[in-house]
Every structure is written in structure tokens, then in C-alpha cells.
Length: 112
Length: 146
Image (cartoon, rainbow over all chains, first blue to last red; front, side, top):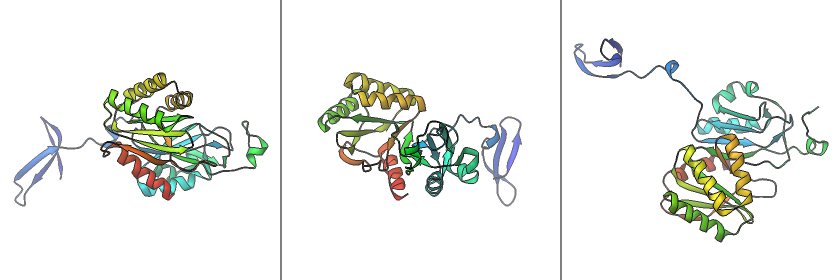
């Protein structure tokens, strides 16, 4: 629906018929840039263990099934740079070396 | 060369990482060195006390069990429940696990195999599971495929 600016309601989505007559309106969704994000708190898949760099400990991935599946595989070779890395699977797939570095996971007990 | 306190023996033993399910809204518990009867008792008692509707018990290895409740709660309430069970049951393993979850600010249960331990399997179900348990099983399926 095309958006218009109404003095009373701000940005609204308005639908009109072929003649241009008003049909219905609803509030326009808030643009993504206006939202304040405090991180992701939904369901995640954790990839954890001790790393060869001695720093990283876990990735917490969220996203779609396909992205998670790929991210888990990639995380086998790219270990986290920091102790806890909470990142979306798509962001990790796009820029893996922003969040991790090349290494391997080490055989050592770690608390889940 | 690797740095940061990893010994030579460990450098020679690379291992695939473990996979787990993490969130803030599901009440999870990790009991170590206890019997199934003990776990079932505390799961039922916790469910009734906090009105958590339903739960599943997973056996991760011999005398090691995970409990997952069906009702979603806030993180604040989640910590409250985990701490209550730890204090009341006096289980040392649960306390150690609980401390780690507080550091991470989200709770995790293992889904993949770990050394000689196989991946946790469901050994007991109670109540109608259609909320958080469904989510957990969905992610478990995904991780098992990976």
C-alpha cells in the first residue's frame, strides 16, 4: 500500500480503488532504522567448546534453518574471537572473519 | 602457534564443537549424578509450584538428566525457578550449570554427542506439550541433521 503523511496520524498506508477513491488505511510500520534493538532473545543454536586460540568459547546463532545449518558447518573451522559471540547465522555467513578466526575446537570439558 | 593456555596434548586432539539449544524463555534444568526418580520428583514439584504446565526429561548419560518445561517465562522468572530448584534440591551439578547460565544470560542444553556420551534422548513426558517443547524438538531435529 502506498504511504501518505496525515497531519493527525503521521505516516499511514492508504489503499484506494481504481477511481482513486479511499478504501481503507492503517498505520505504516516503523522504519527499521527507528527501531531500538537490544540484541536477539529468541531461540538459538549454540556451538561451543574450547578453541585453539584459547579465548573463544561459544557462538549463539539465530536465523532460518538453512542459515543455521550452514553456519554450524562453517563454525567448525572458524573459532570465535571473543568468549561469547551472539550473532545471526546470515551475518556470520556473510562476514565470518568479523566474528571469528581460523582455528579448531579442542578436546576439553566445558559447561553448557 | 596457538596461545592462551592450551597444552600440547590438546593441540593434537582437535574435536568437533558441541551443539546446544539456547533461549531465555524456556525453563531448563541440568541434573548431574542423580537417579531418574530424583529428577522426576523435582520436575513434578517444580511444575506444580510454578504452574509450568508440562515437561520432558532427557537422559544425557548414566545418572545425568535434563528437564525442559513447556510454559514460556521471562528471563527473570527463569532464573528464579532455576535458583529455587538448585537451593531446594541441593544438587551440586545443577548449581555449577546454573552459574554458567547466569554468566551467559541465557540457558543452554546440549543436543549433540559429547565424547563418549550420546546425544540426550527423551525418557519421560508429562502433560500436553505444544509450546516450548515443540520449539526445542524442532531445533533438535535441525542439529541432529547437521
